[in-house]
View 1 (spheres, helix red, strand yellow):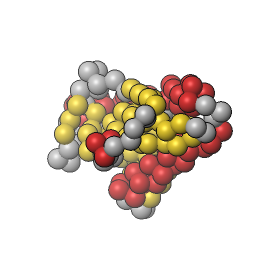
View 2: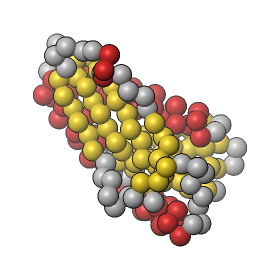
View 3: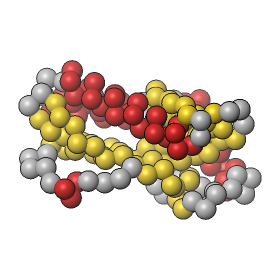
View 4: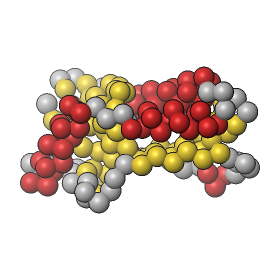
Amino acid sequence: MSAFPFFFTFSDKVEGNGFVADVRMMGTVLGMKEDDSTWMYGVQPGGIAATGENEDKAFSAFRRTYTSVLFDMAEEAVDFATFKERVEAFFKEICEETKREWDEAVEAVRRGDIESEGREKKNADEHQPYVQVRTVKKPTARHNLLDELRTIAA
């Protein structure tokens, strides 16, 4: 079993009850190759996980799960303020066990025990996860951003 500590970046426009929100998140996920599948375990936010037959499919499934959580929160929120509170609370959820495994994988990358496989490295001590939730007054194409899972924590 191999573990890889990743940063991920998501940007979403989410429609709710009378609002459109721009949600940007840089979080952490632990990728684990197990037998014939790959898992993506949320570290921050914790509480979500997904699997696929390879890293790309597992990340895609993780993304769908994350997006589904946002959509459910938007549907249940009575207004933007409530939605923002729920997204921020969701983001703050950290799976402590997975966080320990993520920290161990970061140390393994630093020692050279885990190859970065041609990925850009970001120092885990200098890049802290964040979430931004803003109301969108006038949506435009400049808000279109691609998801990425190309940065390994070191």
